[in-house]
Length: 326
Ligand code: CP
Image (cartoon, rainbow, N blue to C red; front, top):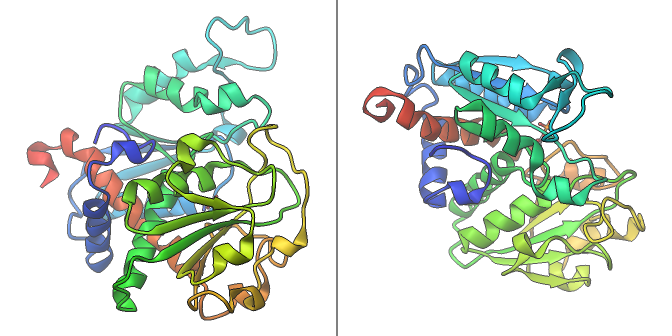
């Protein structure tokens, strides 16, 4: 694997999930895999889970991880080709990225979207510029449109549940929009849809209010409905997430609390397990009763971020280490 930006970088999703579960069972089985290798974790936006889980994953492989909070500690970066840098930006990505590529064997980067310029965001301008100029493998820690490490952890969690609960039928998995007080990226929803469709082992349904359609590039293959109740019927898993509008980009049209998931709504589900990537606004996106209840998988999902990151790092390191690292 030369990079990890989307599901398209993964040859076999189930093999990657199995690798992650192998690391969960035995975290230190490859504790020397990346000895003397160094990863730079560059954050242009805040994080709790992504930052810490990736650091732990790197440590489990013997890799040194250096975190750089670019947004707080770095020079303001310019990403536009040909920019006349007479404004607030201090350093061009084409000057900074090759240096980072010399310092590190692998770069991992978090770059949220602007939610203002759809063309720039959906061209993945920021992470693409790092890939273009760094000269080392790049791992997405959430980019403008996708969050692949989260989606891998989500599928790991679903797979564990299928095994643990001896579910042998094709599971019904529902992604439902939830209210929020501010416009959020579409990344988690786009990414989950992209991975679900590529995985192909679920009956995948997306439900959202009018005007919250996602980009069809990611949702094609899913059943899409604005009727949340019909979507929840017989669901085995419900993934709750807010996103801002895609078509009229980055807006909140309504914040209808009726869309918040409750236990009452879940009665028609198949005793559905409830997922959310976190952080979550309690009693806005998801009720206390669900988050604190037995069907919530949110802690398991977040814990699985370590094994998702470890499996991806091991794959990315293969070409960089003798005998594929093993
Ligand atoms: N789910 C997730 O990416 O969490 P953080 O933003 O805290 O990293």
